[in-house]
Image 1 (cartoon, rainbow, N blue to C red):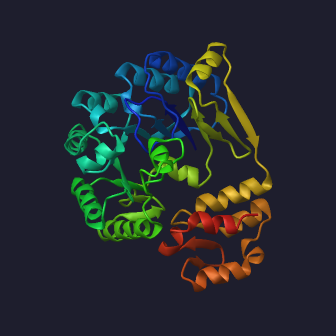
Image 2: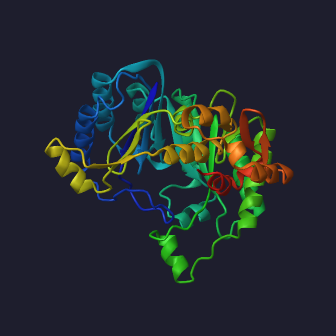
Length: 374
């Protein structure tokens, strides 16, 4: 089974922290949707005969699309791709886009999972982040989604926000739990160079939250969410039992997926494919039936390192036998002393066939993974 990612590169306005590829100029939105449909047709053989198990609309802001634009993409997929009998079809959405009419149409078009970018339940924080919605919109849109029949809803939250203390963060978590979502994704605010926050930071107008405070807020979140029955199955992701995000889990399990649209990535086990991050060039190329992408052939070391980087972020951890069988890489023999140190410091669990990180270790997942690279 395979996955399909569709990048919708449009937003109403730019959030101060975001460095994803998007445009606030929507004059050519319909033309770009047509180009995405054309790319879907041109790429239909990329995944071979594998049926699509998941479809994920990301961005940007996919909920900005009109019903007709969503239907156009959905119909193209149905016509040109083999589909699994049961599928997870996720659409990222902003609360200010989710009218009752829009929600009803999303259900009718085949979307069965929403990922709502709430980020915070504090209006002052939302203004600081330059979000286009207010807290009441967030709770109202969530309840409306429930009322029209969405039974698999994820919400996004951001912590480690300058000026937000632990009590305010705890209140955000409690307000999230009051909605009773099936899934929660929570990310530490990062200051990216080319964003508004990055520019403020370079001028001394914004100070990054200390790592210790960010770690404390993550610990608080894990404690509270686990107490209420959520599984901490990936560094930034929590779900009720049987509600893991299937599409994202397939990334971490290194299943194959096709990415369509400007800036989208694809992976087929042998190579990675990167589509150009430029809307105009993307559309011009598709007009000529060409897909503007670059291909990176993966070396043995690439495959080993990616496997370590993705699996050590998860609750199921790294299958050591997998690395030996497929890549002839024995992590235990290669890094025996380092692994002993990790265990002694309470950062990892090592069994005969599996390596997983403790809660403390997950805080350092990227560093530990890189230390184990081939």
